[in-house]
Length: 109
Picture (cartoon, rainbow, N blue to C red):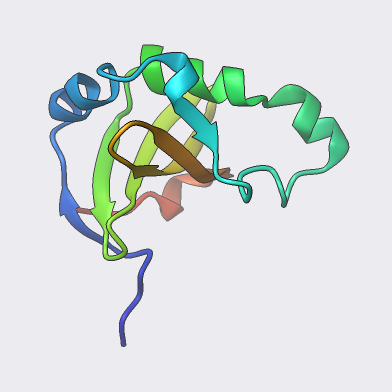
């Protein structure tokens, strides 16, 4: 069975950092789906600007490419494991979704 969210390839963290830092904050956008699952209170805590800062300034501990060719990027953020799914386009990065995950949900790749 095909799982589009399964990670097919691990990416070296430093390669991802070099890639993502080619983009300016204004080139990182909400996909239109990014905040749909969040409550109003959660939307006040996480903004597109904060997510852009995480992508551009923080160092992920794991990066992979999913079967659907989106990147799954994992960060330690505020004491939690944060999974950010992004889609790379020619001129921009779109944040598809993000959510906190538990330790056992971190993929073993």
